[in-house]
Length: 451
Image (cartoon, rainbow, N blue to C red; front, top):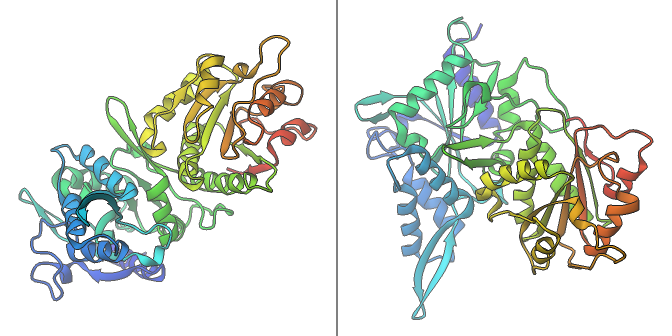
């Protein structure tokens, strides 16, 4: 049976295989052999951050790049979650800077990550990184730094100790959060593992919300024997971790902020759906993105929000129409999207009348519009007016199977009249029957079936 140190070394070895550099925490300490911190309270490797900012933003003047470094390190409030939300926005959207150029003030963005080219970033795994804050001396097992920013904290427990469970690791992370909060201002993902089993969550995740990652390639579900290795290879490899950070973390804003990370099935379903949508909406595409089938409790509303958020960036500001067949479903989905507006980068709109729907769809670009299918019924004895012939309109139909939508004979024709070049994607919790050709005719084949 492995002990905790052996689990740690095996984890670091695997991370090195995934192209993370490795430096022991004591080496980076103020009196270490290659110090990268002035104080034990420093949690960002500032030299690395500065170097990454300079590399990724060569056209921004040095003074503005330095201002970006200061904005990253600055706390906005005394509240950890508010600081974490603010940092996450800087991380995924870039930092607004201003500088003088030819006697004019210019505004621009400084980026902290290169999500398009993972190898352009500095990936570093560090173990036994001592942090001293408010007289608390703590040493998380492994911290993963990307461009000098401590984005992932991994707590490992001794598999030989019956009392040292994954839940013990979760509790240890909660203690760290309370005692060294400055580290968690920059945190994106928390992981607890005993060397075999492993679960991941966020700063606000309860123990029940910490989840395993069950696939490496998105096609094969692995058994539960080597959960940590699957999580490292499937979730923490440079391509996936950058994609997760950029597109698959939601801060739901209600009374309290809830930070949610996509589960493995949501992540792979969304990426398959986005790829299919981009292909279907090409000039020679058939406008049929496909049907996403989801099981009960798979988090369909979040899948739709993640899908819309990624599509907004990948299709350069499309108009997204979310279609339901009942007002209560419309309100429910709309509520999820409103709470996820940071990810969507805009405020969703709800069309409560046919006139309002037509007004919202006559925009030049952008917009996320919620409506019920009935709003696409024309006035009696008239044809539904064409609202837009743009090709970057995507219609998401909720519960898109034949029993809910009389697509071929009725509503589908009216929608085609209104939006002749839109692309269509269906979401359903009901497996499509073999004899049901209509749903396939409107939306195309299954995108993901075995979520």
